[in-house]
Image 1 (cartoon, rainbow, N blue to C red):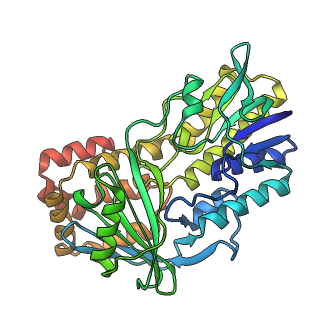
Image 2 (image 1 turned 180 degrees about the vertical axis):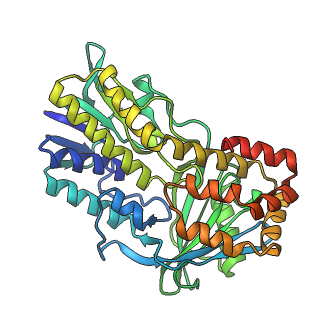
Length: 400
C-alpha cells in the first residue's frame, strides 16, 4: 500500500492535518490504533470560541454541550476569585463526538481513515522516514506523527519525546452534581492536584465533569476525595485517564521525511494542559509544509525544518510565556497561594482581573499575562504576597 502522506494517530491534530492536506488534493491516510475515533475520551472538553475558528471548526450542535461565560478559581484554603464575562468565551464539548466530527470533515475533504491499526515503527529508505510499519506496511512520501504523548515512534526516529511536566490526568462525569450554569470551577492545592489543578465543569442538567491532573499521588483517589469534598458524593462514572503535558514543546519537531504534531510535539498549553487548539494550529502549519515538500519533492530535514521555523515564529512566544507562568505556579506552596488569593480579594482587584480575562485570549495568553504582571495594583499584591526577590524572579521569567 502507498500514499503521499501517512498520518499516525486519529486525534484532533492528526485529523486536522489530514483535513488540510486532503483539501489541497493530497492523498493522505490516517492510521488510528483504537477501533473508534474519539475513544478513549480525553480532557475536560473546554474549547474557546476563538480557538475553534483558528482551527477551522464550525459550531455544530452535535458536539456542543454548554456555553461558558466565566468561572471561579479556588485557593487551597477555599478562597474563591470569581470571574464573569460579558460574552461566551468557550464551549464545553463532547470530545468523542467532536473528534468524530473532525474525522467526518477530513473524510469529506478526501482523507482515508484506517482504524484499529497500531503502528509499530517507521519504514526507512536511505536514512529517511518513507512509510510506516504495523500490521500492514504503508509506503509514503512523508509521515506526520500525531501518536500522542507516548512518543514511542518519535524516539525511534531520534527525535525527543515530551519530557518534564508529564502529569497523570483523570476525568469522570458525576450525576446529581449542581454547578452554576455557564461557570467552571478550578481548584488549586499541592495535596489535590500537584502541578496543575482540579476542575468541575457543567456536563448536563445536574451533572458535572470533574477531573484533575497531578504529578504526585494516586489520581483516582485524589479525584474521589475532590468529588466527595465538593459535592458530598461517592459515586461517579467510569473515569478516563490520559497524560497531561505542561512542559512545553520538544526541542525538534521534524526529521527526514517526518513531522511531529500535537501532544508528541509538546504543543499543549503549559498553563492548563489543553492541546486541541494550539496543536491544531501547528498541525495546519505542518500540512502547509508537507504540501510544499510534495511540490518540491524534497523531504529532507533541511527542507522540513521550515515547519519548526513557522510554528515557533507564530507561537513560540506564547509557549514561552505560558511555560514561565507554569513554573511560577509550580513554585508556590499552598500558604503563599492562599496569601495571593486573599490579597487580590482584599485589594478589590477581582474586577481588574475580570477585565483582563474578558479582553484576553484563552489560547494566546501572553497578552493577558503581561497585563496582569505589569498592572500597578497586581504588582503591589504580588510584592506583598511573595516579597521583592520572588517578584523579581517572576518578572524575569517574562523579561519584564
